[in-house]
Image: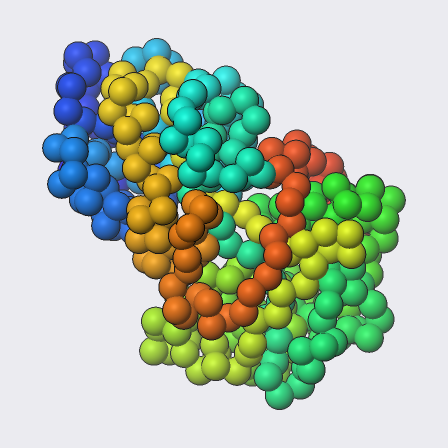
Length: 333
């Protein structure tokens, strides 16, 4: 596998497509994809060129236009995935294999993107100061009983906006605005840092609960400095009062310009296979979604949950509303 840390500068945009390669623009670092791409190359003989972009994927693809070398885009959040789709930079893919491997709520109804793995946005709770029965729903986080006990990252971060969009989906804007105000009033400090910083704050006794993605537990347990933080909390899986636990995805889409379309479809079908999803989920402490696939023993140890069944494209459509409401209540202020 040939890796690039910027866009695929090693591939001239005007060069003819090579039959035995496929080019991937990724919001996730190439080394995290290496177990998958290496296995795919070994099985098929098709080289996978991965370009890591930390931002600006839409702008890059727009600038490259029809000469883009990228066949596929790989993102780690539905809002980023939908942004590429909504910009008209992808094409629909018809594949019985993809439809069999990816449950309906984790793929675009029009076939423009397909999920690979999920992560739940859950509550990290102090083992010493929070009884597990205290956290049942996301709605409950606005209850005054949590005043001065909650830490969170910025409300305008994409992970938080996805959760707020889900609240709009379930309850509407008026309820969600009141909910945001309630959660804000329960914060012990202004939103700051990432999800792991909130767990550190729980460990330090600054707050009792925080919102975070499940995979951060696995990442903290792999870091000697952060293991103590991780061991101070347990994962709790709240639900919406008329739904399930909020999840987000990593996903893949084919670009409109894809010069290696057949190879790209082969890679998409491989990435969504149960074996590949389990391999990728293991590397990133996420949940595979293909029927018959199972999480790792560590991920399973965190507990089971029922995922909310809303199609994630519906939530992506509510992102702007979620941002507007978050700003109206000055959540980060």
